[in-house]
Amino acid sequence: MPNTSVACRALALLVVVALDACTSRHPAEVVRRFHAAEANQGVAIDANFFYAIDGAAIGKYDKRSGARVGGWSDSSGRITHLDSGVVIGDELYCAHSNYPETPMVSSVEVFDTDRLAHIRSIPLPQGIGSATWVDRINDAWWVTFANYAGKGGEPGKGPETTKLVRFDREWQPQESWTFPTVVVRRWNGMSSSGGVWVEGKLYTTGHDARELYVLDLPVSGHELTLKAIVPFESEGQGIAIDSGEGLLYSIQRGTREVIVSKLPTVGE
Image (cartoon, rainbow, N blue to C red; front, side, top):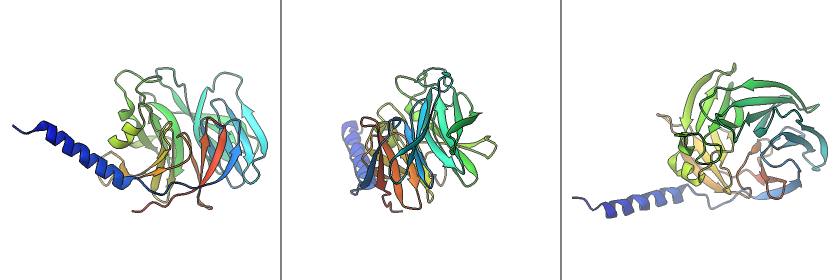
């Protein structure tokens, strides 16, 4: 009969070694900080401004000075839990859900960035999870649907059932992927709160860990492949990338700050 205790210790050691190999020794270096009252869920950027996102409010700020130049808030009660966002052209797309209510209902809420006005809603399929972040690349939309172990979770659906779903341009689902077990465990019962594509790699965050998880689509199968874990200043939440300047935008909920860091280099 095999010695199961020895086998378990050996497996645990292999996991630690593999995780250590993925963990970067070079954290994302902070270069700027801005106070933003709405910095509670995520941040999005365009050429001249960043947009601090709260559950039912958005602030528009000058990207150089940090001066607040506009804002939006919902008083109807229809929009309750905006999350991470991305600017495409002159529109800001924000993932939205009814978290922590169940059954989960999700949408993408769209805003005109010039006027910072809400202009339309895009309903998302139910039964997958709560939409937490959205991005667009290669003529496709990408949305992560979170599931949770506790508050806001549904029976039989834990964090391991969180999915990244690719939609076509008409918002029809095409394919989906789950997250690696080692990443799911580091969510500590929560899920993926932010994500962006950068030069073929997917940079994601958890809910409160000071880490970026860099992922690839798998060669085969439907589990994302972990390439690196990078320490960074923020405690999870939504992120944005200024690819032109090689900068990562994130938030710090406790201090209501938008944090700008150098985008870390990740090897193949």
